[in-house]
Amino acid sequence: MSIRHGLLALLSGGPRYGYQLRVEFEASTGATWPLNIGQVYTTLSRLERDGLVAPGGADEQGRAVYTITEAGREELERWFSTPVAQTDRPRDELAIKIAMAVAGDVDVAEVIQTQRVATMRALQELTRAKRAATAGLARRLVLDAQIFKAEAEQRWLDHCEAVSKEKTS
Amino acid sequence: MTVVSLRDVTREHGEVRALGGVSLDVSAGELVAVMGPSGSGKSTLLNVAGGLDRPTSGTVTIEGEDLAAVKDLAALRRTSVGYVFQDLNLIPSLTAAENVMLPRELDGVRTGRARDEALAVLAEVGAAEVADRFPEELSGGQRQRVAIARALTGERRLLLADEPTGALDTATGDEILQLLRTRCDEGAAVLLVTHEPRYAGWADRVIYLRDGRIVESGAVRMESAR
Image 1 (cartoon, rainbow over the protein chains, first blue to last red):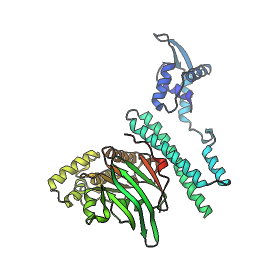
Image 2 (image 1 turned 30 degrees about the vertical axis):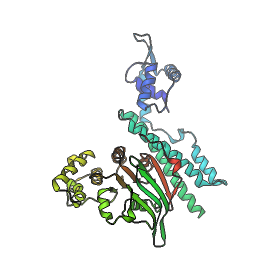
Image 3 (image 1 turned 180 degrees about the vertical axis):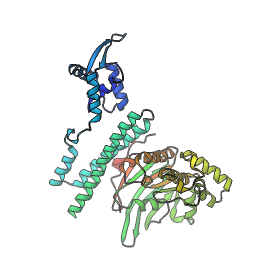
Image 4 (image 1 turned 45 degrees about the vertical axis):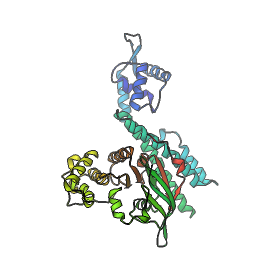
């Protein structure tokens, strides 16, 4: 997840101070990836170092305000126009677990069913959150992203079960 | 309160055992999803639960009535149970409203009243504007809404849905589940067969069928949302 680009995107809408960035980031992603204020300031100082944002003085209450630079806008544009690579994601623990179960002396069907129950529970919770999220398209779409991922995992588990059954029968 | 109850239900088609001893209760206000690979007995379970098919052994009770003792299953099906099937087509020569009115008219309700009821339930499912159109003039999502309206008309407290999201896109499928969920939250018992995990996610409880038997349903139970 790119906090860096998330903050740039928020700053492209106008100058903001640190706490405000945190609140808006969580509002648009539905607090799916909670940010602590330390992460926000660390990220802002790196962005400043790289010339993508500039400190813009303080507002009337003395809070340090940041502004996106021209280089920052270009970086943001590049981010939006570049697809996310599959290989940027960490190793898939579940795939490794199932692979090890199949290779070893483990009841694969049991491992699959245990995961299926847990993934379904996650899907139920996500769906409930989606039903509660009546306002806010951004939040709903973030929840949908997680629902599609959980669904893909569930389908893959069904596939694993069917295929491993064929192999053993 | 339990609306439908299955006890040790088996169903054999000749040599083939479609259900191998299933026990299941669905309460008012509860949405239960049934998942499982094709041939696992999902649709048979739904048909038996709704009195469309009789079990080989075991008992099915709807609102306290043992179906084995019910002489006129057709009447019970028209008045207590609503069905939504993927392929249960609307009658092409009737408008949406007339399709919804049909089961009520068959039950002896006067045309005027049946039409009022139909318009009310079509409005409830967000299909008021298509009431006087014919099925072929409707989109897939609209047709399914009308089919759900038909399943809801009258005071039916058990709703059975077999792949109701069939060929619909995911956004429309979600709307259909929202409808079923709303009905459920108002007190209906809903039994939903689906092979799509995303729709099972709307349920209070998900059961998995394997070779006509329930696998570990207890583990998937969730606290009710209400």
